[in-house]
Image (cartoon, rainbow, N blue to C red; front, top):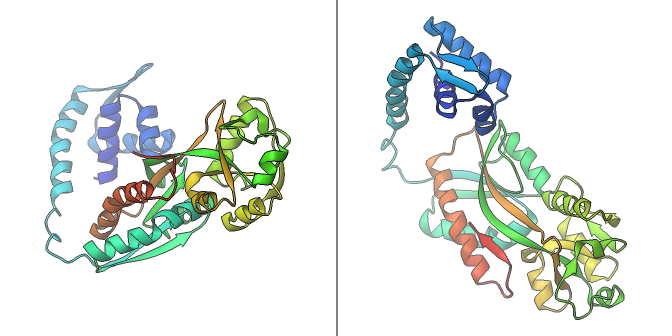
Length: 312
C-alpha cells in the first residue's frame, strides 16, 4: 500500500472532513478524495461514511485506523538514531529577502560556523515572490518569506511580525505636513509620490489591502523590485516609500531618512519560515532551522534603533 495514502486516510479521519484535511496539507480536495478512494479499493471495504457535516469512520475504517496508526509511527521512528553520531556536514541553501539578509545573514553564518562548522551555508536573496518561486522549484532548503501561506509545495511557520513605516527624506516630511508627527494614517498617503515594490512582494500586497480598507489610493511613481534603489530614491528626496524598520535602521540612525509609524489601521508584515514539502530537511537543515529564531532575536535586541520586530 502507498504510505502517503495511509497518511491521508488518517488525516481525514482525524479532521472528520476532506475539506479541512485538504487545506491543512495543501492537497486539492478532489485529489485527496481520489487517494482515499483508491485506498478503499485496495482494502476492499468502505472506510468512511460521507454526510453533510463531513465524514466518520465505518467499523472497517475504525479497525483499519487502529492497525495503521502504530505502524506509521514505527516507520517514522525507524531511522531515529541512525545518523546521530555522524558529524553534521554538507550544504544548506537559504533564500532570504534583502532586509532579512542584512539583519541575520552574517550572524547566522557566524553562529553555524561556531556550532556546526561542517555545514556550508549558501544564501540566495531576492524579493519574497522570487524566493517563493525558488522554494517551489526546489532550489532552496529553507526560506524566509513575507506573508506566505502553506501550499502543496511548501510548509510555513510564523517567525516574526514587523511593523510598517512611512519612510521619507526629512525634506519630504516637511512638504507633506508631517513634521513633528508621531504617526501617519493610511488615508494620508493618498497623493504622496511613492516608490514601492511590485505586487510580487508581500509588503506591497499588505499595503494595498490596507489602502483598500480606507478607500484611498497610492500615487506610485516608481515600482522598484530592488531595496537598494528604493532606499536611494527615498534618500534623494524623490519619493516616499513604505518599509519595515530593519530595512532602514542604519539610514534612520544616521538621519538620512525618517520613519513614521503607519496607523488607522496599523500595518505589519509577517515573516514566515518556509520549508519544502517535496524535499524533507536533513539533519543539517534542521540544525540551521533551530538557529534562525535565536539569531533573529539577538539581532533585533542589539540593533542600533528599535526595530519594532516581534519574534514568535
